[in-house]
Amino acid sequence: MPASVTTPATALPSTEWFTPELPGATTLPAHLQRSGHGGWWADDPGAVHTLLVHCGPERLLRGDPARLDPAVLAGLGRGQFHAPDRFLPLLGRTFTHLTPWVRVVYVHRERPRPVSPHTAGWVRPLGPGDGSRLDRFALRGGAAHSGEPHWTAGTWGGHRELAASGFAWGAFLGPYLASLACGYLVGRDHLEIAVATDPAFRHLDLALACVHAATAAAHAHGLTPTWSAPESNLASRALAEAAGFRAIRREVVYWAGPAAAR
Image (cartoon, rainbow, N blue to C red; front, side, top):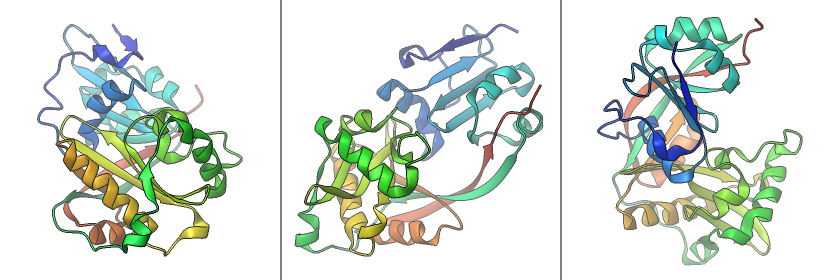
């Protein structure tokens, strides 16, 4: 089975499978090229029948599962797969656990609920010097023992990469990053927003203020802001509604891992 793996994102094989770009996971190939983080696998880069694109915990599969090398999947470890149902038997054989969950996809369409000018004044863009603040934010959010970056930075390669991306906005209370909204996936036409708040600073409208900044910047860049949340995550869905997002569809994704022993 011919194969190609590349981590530089500038050489994705030509394919029409992700055109037009839709809200959600099809922004991943463009984000891969923008961020330089992640990689892809094709059964034959010259005549692609199967394509895997991955970035952080996100995996996007298209094509013929019979032409996908299971060792490539296993090597990725745990992650979230966006894949047609025809890939499920292969995923089930490759990983010890395969858990489906329903998520709701939203698009920004209406005026958001306003926040006070005082609260909005705490929000600013993150910059290259804010990596250590993201380190502290991750520790306070419960990532102290994982050794992994905060989940919002997973598609950028780490805290310093996210801080320098130009697509992150935070609410700062003194030296503390209290809340964060960022472009989790930034495509050609869409910007999918991720939001997180330090547990000590919840219920202060800080997350909503950060989302205001993120959506305004997305529109300024000519990008449509999008949002996705598990159907069961009522808090995230309520925040999306307050920020002017409206649901456009539901979809099933699959959390897989770890790889089964061979």
